[in-house]
Image (cartoon, rainbow, N blue to C red; front, side):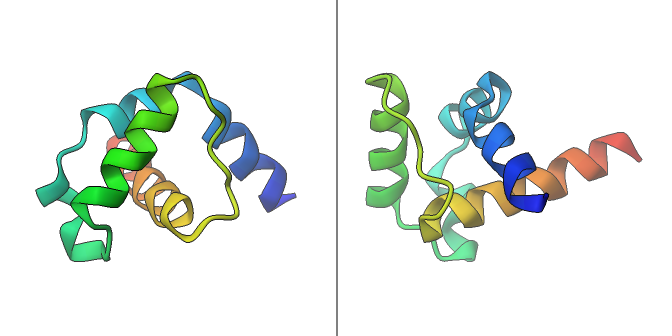
Length: 73
């Protein structure tokens, strides 16, 4: 069940807009390089799907969930 929810989040427009808005310094502490962040942003801009099984996308998804939970509380 968790996978299907993650898959839906990764496909969501809100998640993609969030990735396009973040800066490399915001995710550097989480092990995401500037180059890899640029690659993921390029995929979004080119209309390609993000793979929710890739390590970088998993890290971004976890950060997104944490931020979303903080906003809800």
